[in-house]
Image 1 (cartoon, rainbow over the protein chains, first blue to last red):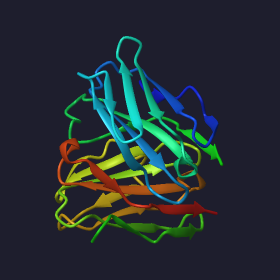
Image 2 (image 1 turned 180 degrees about the vertical axis):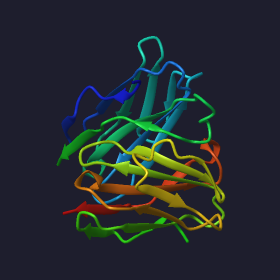
Image 3 (image 1 turned 90 degrees about the vertical axis):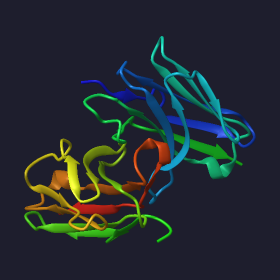
Image 4 (image 1 turned 180 degrees about the horizontal axis):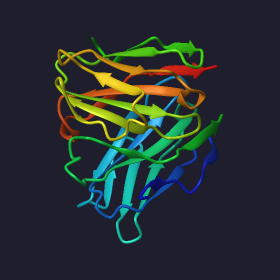
Length: 116
Length: 114
C-alpha cells in the first residue's frame, strides 16, 4: 500500500553542524506534511509543517523542503545541538476519503545523534 | 490541563488479560486520536473521535480493540484478550479541530504483554 518512508534510519553529527533528514512518500494525493521530533518516553512533538502548494518553509533553525515531482520531503536543522538528539518522523495527511480531519500516516523514523 | 495526559504510563498484562488505557485530552479539544507505535516504528492510526462520535475506526487491528469517548472528553482504549503482538506504545492526541489548530500528543502508555 502507499506509505511514507525514510532513506536513513540513523544520522550522527557533530554539534554545530547542519543536519538533513530525508523522507520519501508515495501518495500523490497527500496535501499536508509534518515533521515530528520524538524523545525517549515522550510523544511526538510538532516541529514544522508544509502544505503541498509550497516547496519550502522555514522555522527557527529548521527548514522543510518539499519536492512533489519526486515525492520527497526533507528537514534541515541548522547548527544542530545535543538537545536535538531524538527520533524524527515525517508524516502525511493522505487527504483521501475525507480524512482531512487530521489522520496522519507516519514514516519509520530517523535517529539523530548529536555529539558535543 | 496543560497537556494530553495518559494513564497508566506503563502496563504489563498477561496474555489473555483485558486492559483499559485512559486518555485525558486538553480541555475543550474536539478531536481525539489514538495511535499505536510498535518498537522502532512510527505511530499508526487506530481511531478518531469528534466529540463523542467515533468517526473513523479503520485502524483498529481487530475486534478485540474498542475505543470510547462517551462524554466527548476522556477516552478509553480497551483491548480484550491481549496478545503479545499488542505490545506497543499507545499514543493519544487531541486537537481543537483538524490541522488548522495542530494537535498535541500525550506521552503514551507502554503496554507489554507477557
